[in-house]
Length: 81
Image 1: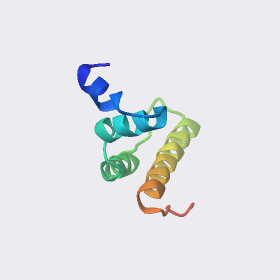
Image 2 (image 1 turned 135 degrees about the vertical axis):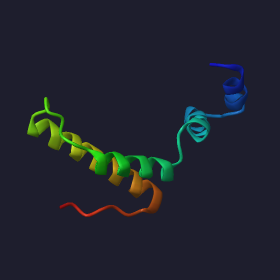
Image 3 (image 1 turned 180 degrees about the vertical axis):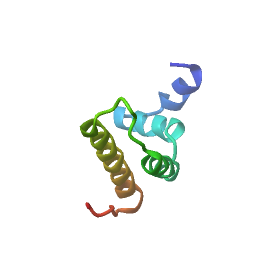
């Protein structure tokens, strides 16, 4: 851990508080993450070497990640299709 992280976490009283401080500094904002996930989802294309089951699984994972982030950010989710 570098000096900046040590200073940031030195006053923390619990591991949960340390985690919260570190994610606030290093994790992208929820809004940015939603934007990135939406872009990935709508640009998603099946690779020639990828079978259909793997492609659908990848789409489902992106959709699930997007829904999780929307829930965290707004308290709502996209409906299942």
